Structure formats: C-alpha cells, structure tokens
Length: 373
Image (cartoon, rainbow, N blue to C red; front, side):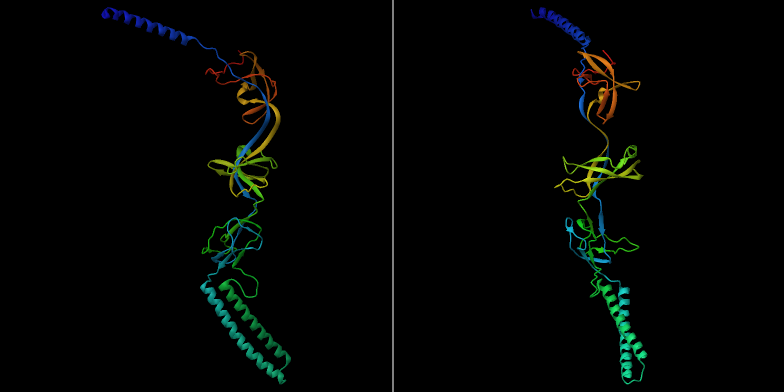
C-alpha cells in the first residue's frame, strides 16, 4: 500500500513546489509603488562661519630671567601663586669664575697697599704743615690721594663681594635675587632648586626661572586655511568652544589676521587672534585647546530648508512641492545664505509647503526622480 502511495506523494510534492515557485516569481515581478517622504520649510537662524583651531593663551606672558649666572638656591613661588611687581621669585647662589675671583682679590690687595702708602704720606705731610714747612696746596694734594686710595679699597671690596655673592653691603641692590617684573599669576616654573642657570645679556637670552601672566586677559590664538582667510575681517564676532569646559562657550571679536601664511603639512595657514570675554566665576587655564567659530554672516528668523531638498537644473535651483498626495510639481526658488546644512529661501516656497525629499523612502526604495510625477 505504501509503495503504491509513494509515487503519488512525490508527484504532489513536485506540483506543489512548482506552483509555489510560480507564485513567488509572480510576487517578485509586481513593483511596489514608490512612497516619497516630505519635509516642510522652517523658520530658523542661518549662520555662515569658518572654524579656526587653536588654544586659549594669556595676552601677555612674561618670562622672568636672572641677572647673574649660578645655581638656584631657593624658589619662593610655584605655579598658581599670584605675585606683584617686585615680589621675590628665586635666589641664585653664585658660583664665581676662578679667574674673575682671583683678579678681584688681587685688585683689593693692591688697593690696600696703595692705601697704606697714601696714608703714611698723608700723615707726614700733615706734620710738616703743622710746622709750617710745606704749603697748603701740597697738603691738599696728599689729602686727595689718600681719599682716592680709601675709595679704591672700598670699590675693590665691593667688587670682590659682588663676584662672590652677587651683592655689595649697603648698596641695597641684590642681583642674585630674582624678582617679578609684572603683576600676575605664576603659570610655569621650569627650573628646580639646584638647577644651573645662565644670566640674560646681549649674547644670551638667559634661563627662564618662571613665567608670569595676567590670567584675566586671555586671547584665542589659532590658524585658518588660506581658502578661508580672504573672507575674514578684523572685528568679526567669534564664538569659542573649549574642549575642557563642556557646555561653555565664550564670545569674542577677531582682532588680528596674520599678513603672512606658514606651511603646515603641505597646506598654507594664517594665524588669527581674537579677544575672549571671560565669564564671571569661570577660570580658564593657559593653553586650553579650543575651536573658534568665526561668524562671517548671520540671518535670524528666516525661512529655510535643508540643502538636500534643493535640486539644480542647468544651475537653477528648484524644489518639488506636493500638490496632491504623492503628486509633486517643480517650483523654482531663490536662495540666500547657507550654513552647509540649511539654506535660506528668499522666494518660491511658503511655510506650509511639503517638499519631496530626494532620498530613500520608508519602503526602502530610492525616492529620487525627475521634477514631477
């Protein structure tokens, strides 16, 4: 019985499979209608801007340098301290040059010998004057030489002390104590106690002991590409975002555009600087990385559409407006300012118009077509 039913079952399976295949091919051959999504114009602000990358830095940062060479004996400040003009920054222990020290000692010894000789001569002339054996002019000459010898001893002693210690007694001038030349915050101390330092002079800029800056007067310093620099003008408003300060933006104004570009990895960039208006209660650290949106032009509360909705025919812009359900007609438009995402529409559409999107519809089909349907 089973053997007799088996061929019949196989035949029915083949017929069913053939029928399902025909139905599947028929369904695949039926093209589903394309459903286009639409969007409406909106009232928004259009801002054309260019972006400059850089950092927030103090407008004036002063490097404090020593006036003598030696070793840092004592540091009186550390980064974050506020100092006034004349406050002590560090003390330098002078390591005198052997030749200079020997010369200073020899000068002092020679001055003392000269003083001894001048003093003896002065006393001798003074006695002879008392006996009225010499004129007053000869006594005045001996007294002058004696006073000059005393002055030379004092000068040689001060010079020796300067060579050894960097200061002379009673002078009130201490060259081995480094003081701040401005008022501000110490933002960097690149040396440590025991570090050898070099004095600043005509041939060497010297070792920086500390950097002092006014942290209430900050600027944005960055670079823009040469393709954008031609659009910039001094005084343009700037909106600055700092990566380390989330949700905080600072306003400012462009105040400097470099007249000369520099090459950076094959591209020419121009330096720009902008004054930053700090917000009360917000502390901005030096060299925070930041991006500055330099506002080239702005339109507030204007009718705009997404740029992806605009099509072009021989350079003329147009959109497709829905006149009936899924029926669209071409409308030429006049465009205004664009920010790269949205574009201002001056003429051609109204706030209630439904504009066909030139993308993929909800059914997965490509919604792009000609200028009408």
